[in-house]
Length: 291
Image (cartoon, rainbow, N blue to C red):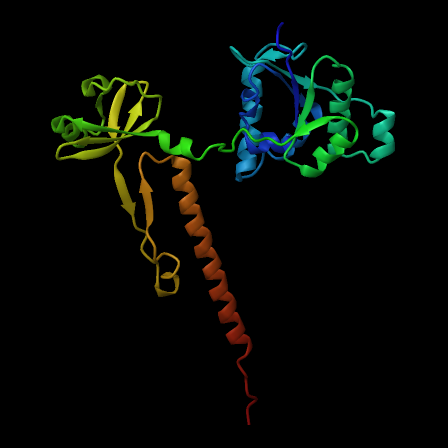
């Protein structure tokens, strides 16, 4: 007997949290309410991470659909379900009586309610990070869950991703220091094939290195540790920049930008405080009248 597919209805906050979440529901179908697309449109402008996710999901949606319509849904890929866009639906009598206000959350509930009533053979589940919306959905008989795909279920799994290989040729390890572009993985004679972007601790008799596997070229390169120190602009800012920014490469460009922006924001805050303090001193100066 074939396993019945579930139908997951996504709330806006899930897409703002992870724009690639649509690929995390295995062979089940995913529905994005039209109200969610309207809300995402309001979040496209800005430099926060939620603005980035809003823009990226729109691009992902455009890439998936191409010239096709969403009638019947579009495939999310091999082994995955379909993605569909559900247009607005009228409030049922139960919904009207319970939630008479016409809000975005209630319109999403109306769509989830419509899908649930028209898919009796499949479990329909509303996915939202809003606890209140999940409680509302459950109160009218709609299954609701939090989005937890991004949570680590077993902390021990993190440490398994860094493998340690010992008794390796010291000359090969030294080549990692001499060739920053890396050397072929096959040269190490390691029986277990690594996954893409996996990290290793390679040990010889007299040397060792932290290394990274790059699947596109099947090479291993050494992870170079760098320290970038930002000097204080003047003595007033010394406390802000006392600690250097330490980066361990390979480091994403976004991470570098985040660190730089954080330091810049602290600098601006310190300058504003200094400016206010000087203004207060000036305002307290007593101008004596001439005798």
